Amino acid sequence: MNASPSQPHPAEWTETQGLLSAEERDLPAGRHQFHKEQMMARIREDLRTTAVAPARNSPSTAPARPRPFLRRAVLLPALACALAAAVVGGVALTGGGDAGTSSADGPALTTRIGAADARGAQPLLDHIALAAADTSETTVRADQFLYIASKVASTYPKTVGDKTTIVTQKLHSRQVWQSPDGRDGWLIEPGNTGKDGITLAGPNPARSAYDRLAKLPTDPAALLRRIYQESDAVRDPEVPRDQAAFVAIGDLLTESYPPAKLTPALFKAAARIPGVVAVNDAVDAVGRHGVAVARLDEQNGERTEWIFDKKTYAFLGERSVQVGPSDTFKKGTVTFTIAITRRAVVDAMKEVPGEEG
Amino acid sequence: MRTRIRAGDPDAFAELYDQCARSVYNHAFRLTADWSVAEDVMSATFMEAWRRRTSVDADGGSLRPWLLGIATNVARSHCRGNRRYRAAAGAVAAAGVPEVADHAEETAGRVDDRRRIAATVTALAALRRPEREVLVLCLWEGLEYADAARALGIPVGTVRSRLSRARGRLRKLAEAELARPARRKRELTRTNRQTKGDRDFVIRSAQEGNR
Image (cartoon, rainbow over all chains, first blue to last red; front, top):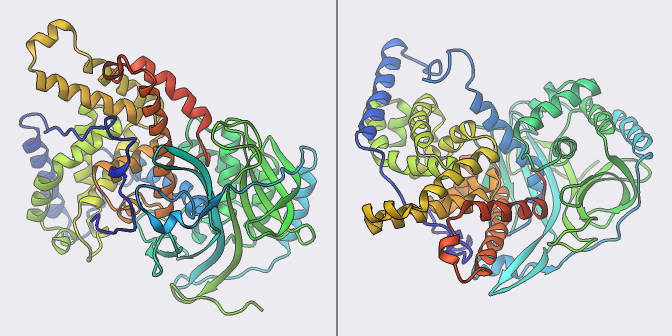
């Protein structure tokens, strides 16, 4: 299971030695057998009462009600999903000798911090929502896949020996295929996945899955309520509530294929989040300059910026910039950045769409 | 084995239980810092595995990653807030520092065992839950990143980024320990100090918010 030499195992981490023990315990006497019998009784009971699906009963929940933790299980990873996607490129683990990633790192990426204007957010988001409303609806069949190509890089503290430096990965490409239901998918991201990529299939549908987005309310107020509700359920208590909501919307916008009806609503919802500002200049991962809608995480001094074309207000990408004090990153450091270069509907996983037009 | 589990063969589940119960139990402890909660989580995990048996892929290796993924989800519902985890970890850490009288009665090995476990949960308490989950899956359970990603239903890059953050925090923690050379060994198990250090991480940390 740990055979892949390209993935340094955390066991090599020197930090963990001494701090973390691998101490294991047995179950208290008799409990192993007790729980085994409980499980076997449940299995026999299920097999006796129903020949087919067993999804009805489990010990801690009433029948017909989905187990609450499963819902959460869907939410949390998904929250991580879309945007972490953005980060994915990033933060390659630098253990001992991972030549692949270390050679691809460079000096920390920095930027000029754009000026923030609190009053400008509302009109800017109005323009953006209006421009977004102008796009025609694409339909996606259940057997098709959404293709999203991007360029990503992220910045992280890298330790070699006893020296830690802040490095930024080389900007690299990332291609994702998602089934509309979010249960199947594929990722190719050289450096992180190998050239053939890896499956993103799993029992938990991605939170930014097309089908899910299609079911979200398109009324901004209702949508925002839903966003807060969902993000409250999974957010780390350390992350300010409004920031979590802003980031959650960003997740739905970035590595996703939001239905045409939903996009304007997402922007209008974002305009209602306290602390959202307009930024006069921001540059995306591939060097395109634009304007940004942003929000500062007052907790860690990092500003998340959604970057839009200055004229067309098309969504270009997203980045995080350290604008406040931090003992990890210098002011002006771009901690991660993603530029979306292509979104398309394709008929098969790993199929790359032809030229646009 | 996978085919039999998918088909709902009771004997296959019995085997799976015997092979993995202990591992799931310890995994659950690291995620909850509470042995009795860990027992509940372990039990619920196998019930849930039975319920979701058809989600097992026909191909693939050991079913342990799949079980650990389920256990992680179950544990999450038991121990949602970090505050709760820290409280539990604090209790374990306190128990790891035996009274002098205790010490005399117990064998040295047992005391060491408790101390090591206390040190572990104390260190884990410095992490956020998502980081703790990937760390526990990848470090103790030895899952390949791709397996951990699948177990948690997140992209492999997320596993990497969370591990990287976890690493940063652990390094800080290790440095903090080194900065107190005189009583280092003992301090490791003292919960009050660790909790203070923890605050710093919380503020500094959060490279990507809650993604």
